[in-house]
Amino acid sequence: MRAEDTLEKAKGMHGKDLLLNLMLAVFKLGAGFFGNSTALLADAVRSF
Image (cartoon, rainbow, N blue to C red; front, side):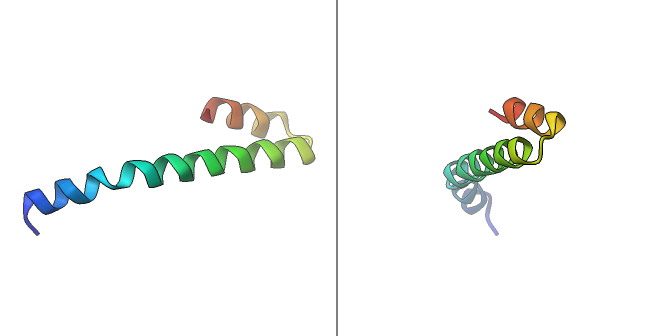
């Protein structure tokens, strides 16, 4: 694979990564709230 192809592929990943991280943070927040886990809540808040 050429360097230019790798660079273009990497540029397209930012939106997907941001959405995935946001979804994970929301999941952690919900799991921490319903599971009564302060550690998971703290991790979720730190993820934002």
